Image (cartoon, rainbow, N blue to C red; front, side, top):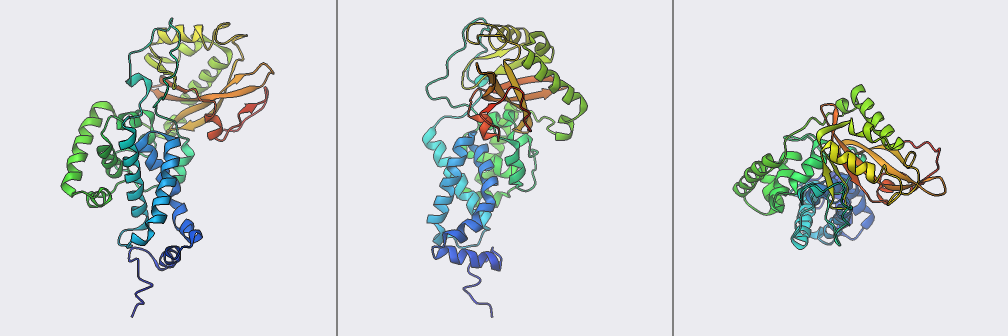
Length: 362
């Protein structure tokens, strides 16, 4: 006859049972052994709900704190992963209830700016979407996707559309259409009924269908020769301050966004005027020779091509300036989202300062 103590947590295997019994007696090391393997996917999950990478880090820490404090209430009828997801989802919903604002991109908040006007300063407390390095998605390896491919489900366009949903609908759509949870599991996660889950899912799908149209996020296509030529020309245009070269790579209706500034620009002519007067211009906010002012280091963010942006210093090296994420459609650039935060390249595993002729591996 099985020892009831060894079968305390029926959803866990014997090794997990032993670790969790030790953790329940106050062994934090065994608790970490059990829970740390889920950190990556929990943070990606929180990121999808919140739209903020920095906040998702905090919420995962909050999830583990709540799990540790509530360990004695875990009965082991659902998997440990499901229990942690329940805690993480509800921690995010609690945060959103306090925050009461949705993270968006500047283009969702106001009309396009006049490129001849000064760039608007960041708001006092900006609430924009934040980029995420692709390595986190690969490390999460969080099971099969249904309606949305893994890379698509962290694209900036998809995240921006998610933010139009009320928090509970957002959570239901992510759990069911991205992570492939069943309705009964989602109902248990949110302490509601299956019918309420299906109702929320229907409303979420209708709403997000108005805001987002599925796009090809196949990484093999993004790495094809045509795309690589486009990206090479993009780097050359930035590093040589070639306005015409940059504009030639854009769709007629392309957009250029620069969080944390609310200013954004639409159309090739508008973007060309803006860059020629500012980032590719000489004097004013960017004194000195324009050619060689910028260095772009390839990286990946949100399932999309991206570059860490570095600006030349008076000493001749380059200092981190931000991360640019590109949306490419039909061989042209549809959107440039330039997250102008000097701390971002370091978060993507790159240095804050690079020497003038240094080679950087992406």
